[in-house]
Length: 38
Image (cartoon, rainbow, N blue to C red):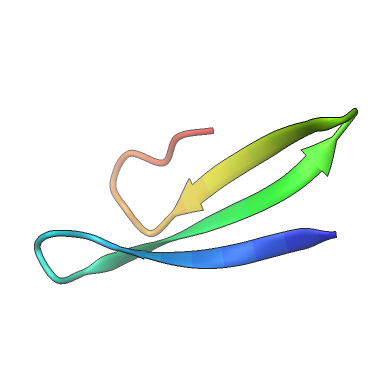
């Protein structure tokens, strides 16, 4: 199962972070900013 977390930024905007477990380790993906990072 995955979780979605809204992460506020200092400039007042926010990004979304998706977290899930894969092969026993946490994986994350961020959306909503210019430099999406895995």
